[in-house]
Length: 237
Image (tube, rainbow, N blue to C red; front, side):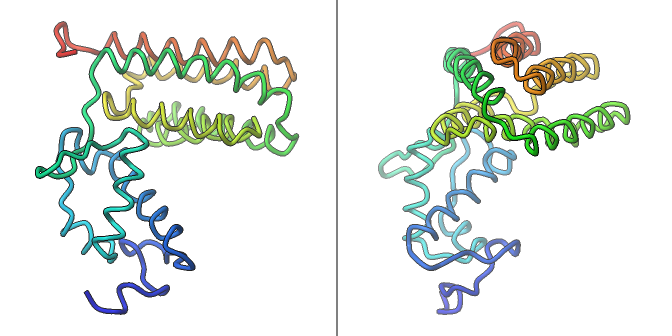
């Protein structure tokens, strides 16, 4: 690999330059890019990571890539098998149900904190985001709605002011992506999801911590049932 591929001017996957002030920032940037690829389904659950191809694609050293992969292992997104390689983790039905249960508890806490701590600017931005979701639903733009849905959850978590809580919630959510991606179902389920978001938003806007906690927790648990409803009659747990 040429020296230019390792300096601070290199672009990752042709998207944006990496901050190469230190090795840790580089590894974190690579890890973040790989995480996005896995969540987007570019690398399927159970699929093997091709170290050489990925290093070439991201224009990074293979040693830095290996360090990034270790971070993904800690996040529960990949499994490293000695003498076999690195594989995107497969999440079983039992694990997915457990993740939903943990995620619902985090959502309950997040609802309380978001309603209590969210700034007026954050609340206003969340209202704007919700209105975008309404438009996406009206236009039957399911992919756009899905992306806005992820932003809605991330913005609510940011309003909590608790970085550890937000990180744990994101970890649970990302691991669930390995089980069932884009689990919003049909347009009728999309409308229900929109109504659930409206209740969360209303609780935050009125600074009603109890209402927001219940609404967010319920939203996650309904998502759990929605997942079960979309499963085939038999599934390997």
